[in-house]
Image (tube, rainbow, N blue to C red; front, side):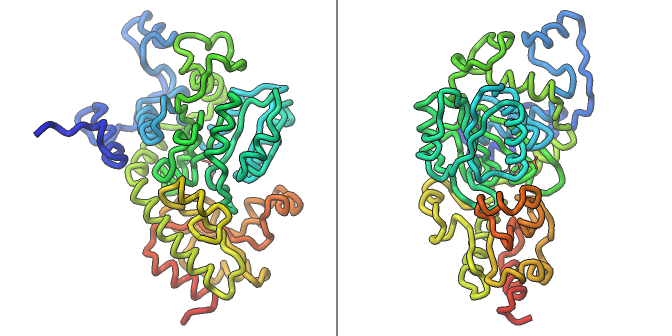
Length: 418
Ligand SMILES: *Cc1c(COP(=O)(O)O)cnc(C)c1O
């Protein structure tokens, strides 16, 4: 019998054996937490080689550590990328992509259904002279209609938080390819287990590692993956100094130097270690949370006290067919409205199992009233524009036993035995 070939192993096998196959010190199964900030070299020439990129190595932890590099390799394998850089948070990763690849006078097209803090960053960019159009990205024609000669980039989320709109991921991918635009896909909600943005032509993939990939609510982190599909050789915003070597590496090279190194949103080795351990069970957790969320969505939709449920796994969802075609599961994010709007907050207080908290993609079920918290700052008018009802409730479904979740929600809705 021939020896097993790691290159042909499945997603989870490669993830749990990745560090070991990379050669871990002392045969440890995990890459250790390297806490050093400085890395010393035998002579000046070696140090110079590392600084000038001729020799692979670490010099100062703001630009990476061996523990962070192990996580980057892990995420990169998961997304089938050409390269991945980790950041302290998902937001640090997003801000680095926007601010290092766009400049004043450029035009960015973004989905109008995006994570609240990302939405806030889009406002910051406008103040810096970058024009931003926010469009309904569930239809690629809306994106196409917004393209101008100054358009450089399109940014979308796979499944939008909190209303779960599914972007026209394939249609926008084809458009970006035809028009030579950088296509950035935030894959946080689906994760590389349920969806590979590279399959629809994404240039760059964002993952908030805090959510699906880390999964345990114990560490923040973010990642940018370059799929290798975008031709950086013709991109006008690559600084002269970074137009060296293989153009395939220019984009991520600039994000690393101008974003990670200069902006300093660097991941710690301690957080990288926790996120790496969490990543080992990504597939198991995403399957479990998708199953639980589907069961909860179906129960809620059938309940007389519920007005509407937003979950891509329901036949009633506007992009249900698209989600079925693109994703291997529908993830942990669902939202719903009660018929009695005034019962929104008392209902949440009647639940005993979910944690009343912000946050997503945790092993524990989390619940939050949307308009009063995460979308409070933007105001009622903008909420209405984004289709967010004042009584919308968001749930991030955890890995608990499904029956316990269903029982608790049923009791709180007033339809079950107490
Ligand atoms: C949470 C989240 C982010 C930001 O990630 P942090 O790690 O919390 O900074 C970005 N995009 C989406 C879709 C998210 O859910």
